[in-house]
Image 1: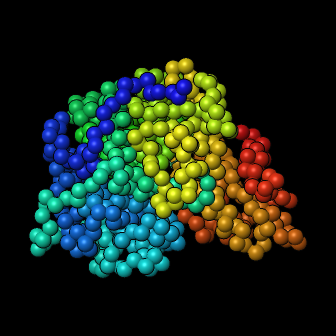
Image 2: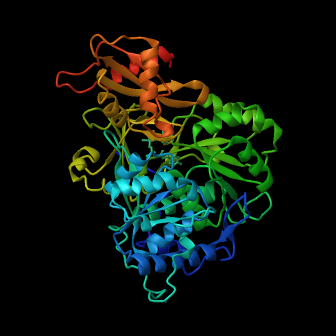
Image 3: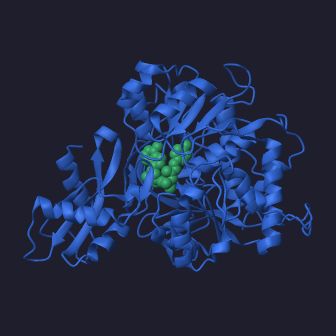
Length: 549
Ligand code: 4UU
């Protein structure tokens, strides 16, 4: 029997995201409550200003570009308080927001723009060189690049100046959508294998995940618009990027829904994080494991008073129990874990603060309305306590990858479960533990690194006959790092200098987080099975031995 959530089922409204966020009859907090706050400039958006700015931008986009239902706008930016008003503008038109990592090279961005059929790009002044190069590569006219954030540029319009000045578009002409079918977000993930693919998230998927999180975070984890310590409400620090689904749903959208304040950091920096926590009295944060490590060990942390923080939620990559213990010893802050995927909007399981110590190491319990099973390699269900692949079903599970219907059979089981590609088990109380990964994905500090992308580049190098990229473990940084195992062409010298040369050659072509930080190793052959399929597990074992994991 599949495992059911221990939490009671919740009702998922049949509404699009705009309706769910902005058109509810009763709302528990005032419309002039500040939601998004820029700690550098003091600029902010209240709930009402977020809605009004989104509406103006949406009408402008429709008037200027004819942007409409089914269209896609590419988001290429660091965190800014303008992010949410801009993407709600896109949703108002009935379009979907595609998000890309601002660390991308022009080629990486162009791939995503083309693949998603983006009609334009919204970016920040600092990223214009990459955005314009990518637009040219993807065939997007330069007047379809618009800016958000504080920087300005003479050539490119800011999104707040894209307005329907002729009042051609009625404020009440918001696109009519089918929440179960129409897309809200297109985020990119490599899934279980290959290159990044567009993860289609429908309005219902995202609304469902917000509703599933609402009770858990409200009732059990104590988040509230009147939250303590000062009764002025809980405040989170958005360190996680909004271009990634964890930051998008769990921070940007959840904050707006629950009236939790979101202090928005453009990019992670430890000292600035500590300063902001102290100054703004931050009460909770969603973070990836390397930041848990910094809080556990970095000397800087001692200079600041972080006592306003009630709890931390770590996710996006595996976290060691010892670090959780160290953060508690040092700061008396509980760290619990959440677990999810881009494909599940994202959250599948989450811890409850009261249980953090008892279930340290666990990613928590299934959110309401989710069914799960652990299966063996043949898809047979395993019992409680047994380790296998995790399969899930629920309203937050995506319908498939954009333009890739042929992947459906590998992505979903015959009985309709989504195969996560993660390995784990659950205990008697329904706590889940993620212990390993079946799929080839590598996570550098929570960011996706698709090995297939790096392997394709390595195989294009004339000195290389074969290559396999796997996750090595960097304990000092509490993260996986990509490492390449390479078969050189006969006669090519296997030296440290050659390994460095290959590493530098590859690193120059890819985004920062995809660099071969785990180094290059030379081998005589890459293990393959009889049909020529790469045996990644065998290569990963080689790395584990070397790293003594
Ligand atoms: C071990 O990383 C995400 C979503 C993360 C997330 C984390 C906490 C969401 C909600 C939350 O509360 O999405 P992707 O698509 O970038 O990567 C998904 C993969 C998973 O398949 C798994 O391999 O990231 C890994 N992962 C984790 N691994 C995510 N969370 C965890 C975790 N422990 N807690």
